[in-house]
Image 1 (cartoon, rainbow, N blue to C red):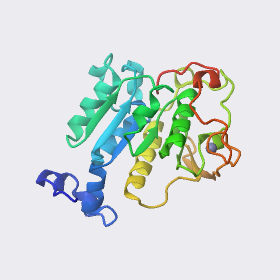
Image 2: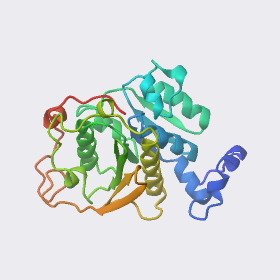
Image 3: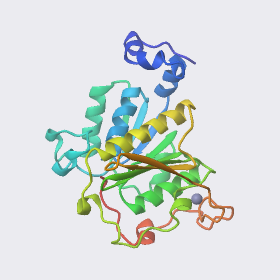
Length: 272
Ligand SMILES: [Zn+2]
């Protein structure tokens, strides 16, 4: 099972391999693992870079957007010459230059109730770096229904949050049963966002995903981590599974994917 590493790999991953909690076995596990990133934007960028550097063998990227000049203030997968290119193409090049061990699977599509099951089925862990409510509820429900771990992150102005939804232990709907009324939460485009902020939250998502793959430490499952960049403060609140949750509760009423734009009262928009 444990294939030998090439000499280059032994060097590349040496700082992991000498870690007692990772070792050659853990590094091999990472190389054989697969993670899907929803969004190659603000959160997906740092997450993808660290996961690629760590040697996660297969990285899926879902994003239908092209690189815009306004993205470069925070979306560090992309470079100035990439403006106008599909984000999945730009991200693929960046990751290939960082670590040729990583196979990038581009999914240049708009995630929907029709295609999400087919996309998530091939991955061990899902990282949600989307920036809109229809996608978040869609990803949540699909992960609950297919039993996939969902590493959630979101950012707003100078604040961010992250948690892990493990199958059977609660979900995004337990935390937020209904989306906010349309128009009450402005997007990054409308309200702005502190450029480093997704770097912090997306990196936390990468940490949690790697811990899940390696079975290390205590995950954020059951806890919502809240970060305030202005006060430089981390807080956490306990999360509990809601037995009355329509998706993951004792008597679920939502047993198949619905129309999420309709549910949220807004059309889904581009990623961070
Ligand atoms: Zn739930």
